[in-house]
Image 1 (cartoon, helix red, strand yellow):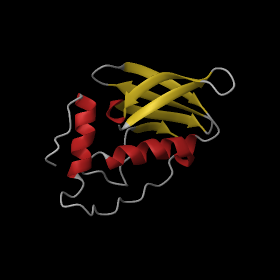
Image 2: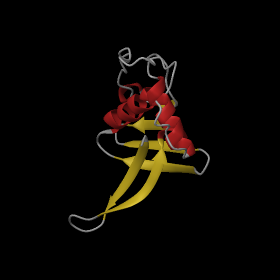
Image 3: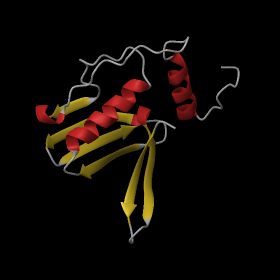
Length: 126
């Protein structure tokens, strides 16, 4: 569904869903250390910042950037993609996406992401 899920461990084997946010709502990512990142969400139903503490900040930022690139058009690997005030070692390189093998050149994936964001049903005719 093109969403970011934030879970909290409660008891052994139990997790609680804290946030369920669409990738399009990522306004900015900041990270000045290898162990913390702040993700700013601004969108139709959210205006919030989440502080993430992990030893895998570069991988986390890479994953968010890669997933976002999959549902946007005109994305360039050279673009910072909503990253400001991020130390260079936390910005792993994003390779260019391979050309789409479908007839629409990735527009179908973009259409589905837009439908999920605006909560519209996806047309079965596609």
